[in-house]
Every structure is written in structure tokens, then in C-alpha cells.
Length: 174
Image (spheres, rainbow, N blue to C red):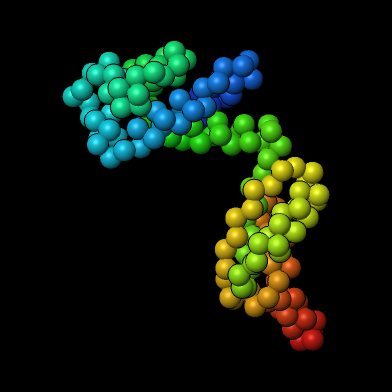
């Protein structure tokens, strides 16, 4: 089984706990941030330290006030030498919560900088189109010449001038 499948299984269980009203996202994020630190990741990767010590280090560095559910997760992960998966598990849980709250991420590529008014109009148009709350991140790529390219999940909408010119070129060349 791949590590992403393992991470997803843990994330699904945590997401179910969140659905039951346990607010563990903040503590999970704290613990994941600790595990992502170079010093801590070196410690948890080392077979010479016992699982209990690894767990105690993570809990202490995260602030000692972690929810019992997160502490239990750390216990299970350290016992199974899977604590390094915690950042990935946390990211998957965050994504699942966003999707459950009908929130999606949109990556928009434009040829030149968008002013705030245009950005707000674009966000509103994408929200109407998707029926969900949209978080827009904008990047610039002068190679598209004009227009924009929108990526939402696995869906890509290409309104770039470069693509339109390429299509026109194909029509004229045939």
C-alpha cells in the first residue's frame, strides 16, 4: 500500500471525527508543523529512539495541550513508524474539510497583473459557475499573451490569446 493511501485512510478517520463535532484541525496542524521540522523529522526517522520518546517530543513541541484524539493519533503513528506521514494526513484532512464546506481552489494564470476589482469580479464569476466558494490564486505568465487560464481541480478552462491564435493557425493551415 502506498504512503498516500495510508495517509488517506488516517485522514478519512479524522474527517469522520470532525463530522462528529471534534475540533481537531488546529491541533492536527500544529503537530504536523512540528513533524515537518528538520530536527524532528530526523528524530522520528531514526530507529534508535523509542516510539514513546518520539511521541513525547512531538507533543511537547506542539504545546502539550493537544486534544486526546490527536495524541492518540501520534501514539499510533509513532508505534507504526508512520509519524512522517502527519503533514500529508493534515493536508488531506484540510482538503476534505474545504470540499465539505463547498470551497475550491482556483489557480488563474494571466498575462499581466490583475487589479483588485478585476480579481473580485473573476472570483465572483467563478463562484457563480462552480456553485461553490472559490479561493483564487493568481500567477502571471506573459507567454499566454492575453486572456487567462483557469485550473479548478482537474478542470482547465483556457481563454488565453495564445491558444486562440494556435487554433486560428491550425484552421488557416489546413
